[in-house]
Image (cartoon, rainbow, N blue to C red; front, side):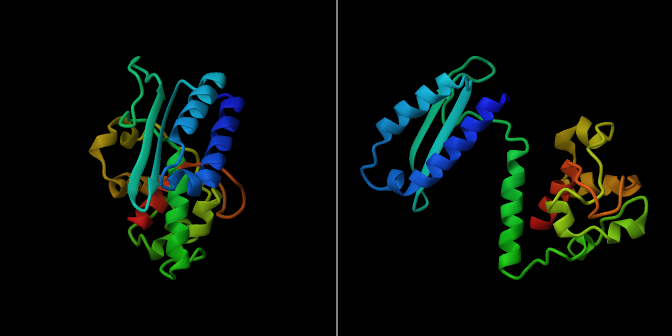
Length: 192
């Protein structure tokens, strides 16, 4: 995604967040929002966009803009691959568990996933929830040669993570940032 599109999406999220109380109010002017979103999506060459606004647990507005990969018009029901957007939701869920006292950021991951291990079992005991959140656990970027990536529907999250038992850390936990989906897969398993 180009930087301009990324900026637009971030700005759009902020605008929607700040405008949420007004937009969720009875009689909100969704026609104005619809016109604005359609114009911005076109101006920033965003090929597809779906929007939903929820008030008091009820969906009060949905809309789709642009075309999906197969050329069909986007609707509120059009599925999108959310990719790493899920990491923000995972982090939110983790922090809610921390706020409720059910999770300790500095506890080893094995406190919550006792079955988790690596090629060096001692190294696995050093990885904390905080390391996973901060992407400095020492786990490297995904190894796409593992079977879990070949047949995504055939493995549960736990089964995928158990396959890391032969993986070595690339560096000591807490030392350096390295983006790794494994970090957030482990956090997802903690949330489950």
